Image (cartoon, rainbow, N blue to C red):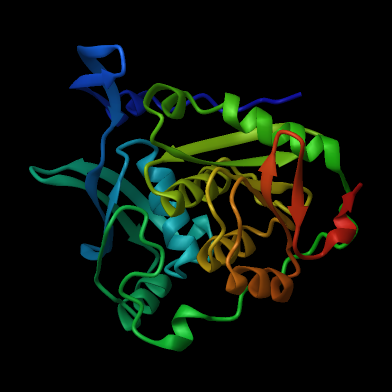
Length: 277
């Protein structure tokens, strides 16, 4: 049975009212629409800005933890001593204070980034960093019934309150055959949504992702596979198609890559033995 975590109270800040004029063949109609908001979010490690991203102002502590993990700033939640969310005049800062050992590591490899909405590899300073080898996941014995995975993707759509309200949000969810859809996070950026999901699971103490699947409402590019590998999920399923590099990276990481998920089926690109058809 699904037990999706309820959205944080700050999710109310994620949408806004916009006036609009609707044109159809029948005529013109004035009215309004709920639209997603996006704001500059700075992730700050020990008083120095690591990255500034355009993101939906919800679940920002999850975002900061997930981004810090997937970018290698931290290795676990234990590397964070304290965390604050501070609203500034032009955006929001999420301030993380790291343990002394980890702080030295971040200082030695710091890179200041300024990226558009959901930018996944902006500011990477070398080709090797952009296509770094992914972590290898476990879960070789994981087996999932194909109809169950398809149903999980349908449940993901139902678990997107901001998406239903605005029609302009990505979502990332975590699902296991035993527990159903246990967490969903939304953002205007697909990378941000996945980082928020990873941060949410880590902060909730849900360390072992080796029995489940990451579900995405977006296409699958290489960094989405890399982030899934950091989480340790053996299956990645998305509604849109993958890139060729994403397929190669999933194979290298040991991830079963499922994509082009529709109401009547999906396509399996790597490690098909985990999907019982």
